[in-house]
Length: 211
Image (cartoon, rainbow, N blue to C red; front, side, top):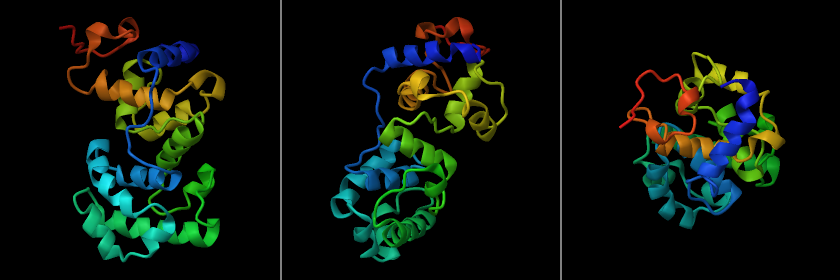
């Protein structure tokens, strides 16, 4: 594939996953941001299991501030890096209350000023909430885009820089959500479903699984 193939790539993924949406469980924008923060180095399934109970008690930044960090840890101690996540969630809520009147900012620059919010986190949030033309590039997205020759890069950061100027509102569709579902259920790291892949002829993966 080449850069000019992106509209076809996006359209094909939209057809594969016509109802694509994030699999993180949330009820409002604040909870989505927290769920994304918690999902770092953890699966959506694991985070959702915690948050189905957690989010019954915690719906706004003020709810978090009313708890001690130790109380937050009690809710999320089964997720990776729970100590750091608890502290940074608490700090994030303080900033949202004091600087943004408990509202979630809407730019990458503002979002990345929050503790534990990296560029990937900000892009995922905006892609889900506003259908913004962003892709949260992690190791999985990096793997898929390199397999398909859309990029030839050595790291997720390099991939993110490469593709950030390619996607627009017009050509990306729901590409963030569809791409996540594609690597999660189709182009998996081991034993990808190559025999039913619409991009098979354009894929450079050497160990194709054609069973």
